[in-house]
Image 1 (cartoon, each protein chain N blue to C red):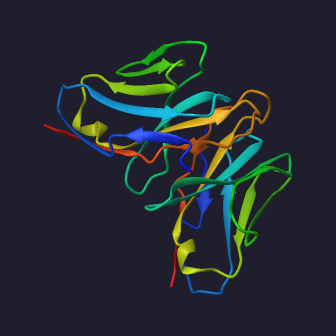
Image 2 (tube, rainbow over the protein chains, first blue to last red):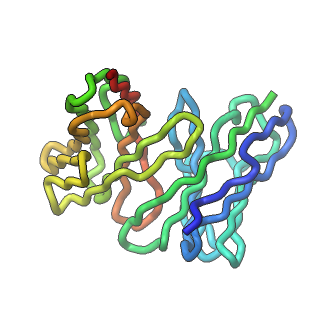
Length: 115
Length: 113
């Protein structure tokens, strides 16, 4: 079974621009979560999508948004980029979102650099 | 506020030795405790996970010990190998079923030959 794929792997943007990152979960997985990883703040939860609906959201400004398509693929968007948005953005897929918290499998991440 | 506290920040172990990484939490609603291994340039990979109904779980050379009353859990890597050199993260999630993991700050493990 193919793992979680993320595109692009590397991205360089300038302040004020916007960016869209893409994630394809493991086949059959319906939940996609996004995390930001930085040296200073570590791994922080951004949001989770299940069946095209945002289920949960972390403590990030509204500039960070996402969506999920009917095939479970997900995109996240960051508008009006700031220098502090430079990070590794990780996508994780899970079989389902329900009462039991499920294993999450991470992709390789997209390294975003904001200049 | 760090929901999961992890120590040590870095660890150097001789090949064949035991690596021990500790984590502590405050939120009693947490009921799922995974450990992830991350190599440079890669995403975190799930190693092993435990729920509070057991005190220990072993998979190969990796063991999680869980102390519910102390709200602590730890990862033990037996017979540590140079290939185990990586950053290890503990995490926790609560009973709402949300796939929202709260991560520790990570431990950089170096296993020297």
